[in-house]
Image (cartoon, rainbow, N blue to C red; front, side, top):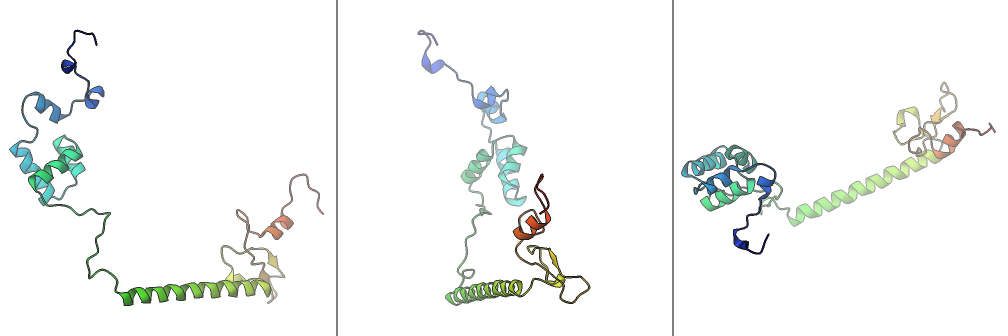
Length: 182
């Protein structure tokens, strides 16, 4: 900018024109008119209230920005929309103290049941493993005994990640390369 140029007369490119696009609202303002004509206001009201379209959908149809649609709807006094993320609970929807107490009791019962199952599994492991019928995803699958015998079972300890065996049986079944059989 040279010294003879009036700073107020310097035009800076807008973001939209910098991308090579001129939004429809800008062309209307440049022509001296308003983007929001009576026809567009009626169309907005119809899409907002009757069709219940989202501001983004309305903006795509009208050729303006989402925020312009929301602002104009607010200025026109159109119905406010509930934010789907925020859920305001009415007094009828809130839990009573009795319901909260019952929920705490249920949570404590579930926690005790889980602890009982964990203890039961630990006792089963100490007593000699897991039967094929009780084998779960996290159990070691190292077989102990002969499959035809009634005492046949699997190790049942917690298995090593990315293996079907626990640490002890994984090391027993797989050897590192170059390691001799022992």
